[in-house]
Image (tube, rainbow, N blue to C red; front, side):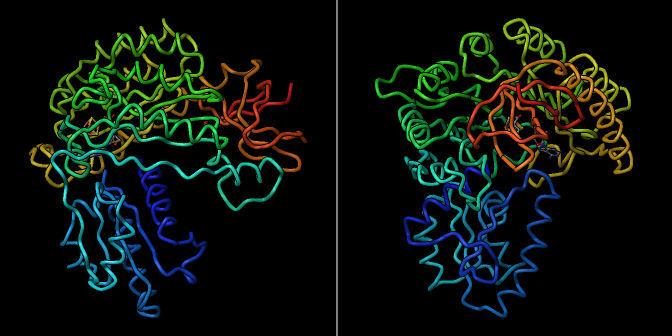
Length: 444
Ligand code: SAH
Ligand code: SF4
């Protein structure tokens, strides 16, 4: 989501005549787009801002802007700690970044973090990137992440209304709002026409798309599954993905989409957070372990090939050894292809930050290590299941004697041979080796 927000700012700024720079020395403007989901992400911003203070002393005309969730959360307070910041831009205000920077030029220390009650996601269309994709196809060494040209994010929702007890998102990104169907379809069309092959639809909980506001011109409802079907009709779109989903709202209709939509990749990130009903209840997640496991079974019935991944929080306040064992058991039952796991981190304003029975840092670290080492074993076993199989990969990077690509299941595949192919091409490879985080293949 931040990556897409950065793109939006950069696009909006290019309309104001700004050009993306490559290094700090030549930059007239530095924007830090920030994340505050865990304390560590926020600490990184603060230390980077500290470093920028020195740069600004030598270059007083350089503007420093802080955007994203830390900006939203801290507002004015950020300036108390970091007086050299010229502009603080909240999550709903990034679309006006050009005007706001102009304001900040005459009034340094400008803060724009107002949130609107009835916020509508603006209709900013992506700039066509045909020139870049053409140059890449022609073999030019464009200074860009090459896969970024062919894989794009499209925002379909903003904010969240779920208030999971640990989570800062409803406070930093505001109320849940779904973007208009037509705007989404148009944006996807523009991207695909300019050479994009893979689209990932983005929202904090895409399962509740279209539930809190009207998204169609005729006022008729449009579920997330309906939206997927519509987007999938875009001619030339090879791969469709989405992220992320709260299991509590996962409909049968959406699960069936994995069977019915050929371009919908057999890959699903379904964050479970914990394998104990007591912890899930205190987290306010609104599903039980048994209900979650039932969803996993049904998903695999509709799409046996599906690769599942998840998010886990260890050491949520009050998590006992038995609760944590529940998470380990769940891991062995589902056998995820991969997971993102985190130590619980107190966030300001959230309900869990007031819970009294905090788990110690030592226990959290030990549990995280136990979880991650078991996940690594399972990932390796899962990856070995691909050995001997032929997979279609989308090429991301080509070297003289190597190639990197990605499967529909979102596995990275490395080839160590000379292949005549360009980024964005699809090629068949036979998998002959599996590591924990990637596969090796040879051209068929
Ligand atoms: N909307 C998504 C989650 C977005 S946040 C969902 O509901 O699944 C991404 C992940 O960060 C979460 O799934 C959670 O595992 C983790 N996370 C969020 N708040 C956290 C906190 N306070 N401490 C540790 N991890 C947290
Ligand atoms: Fe946070 Fe829960 Fe919303 Fe996900 S669903 S963004 S975890 S509050």
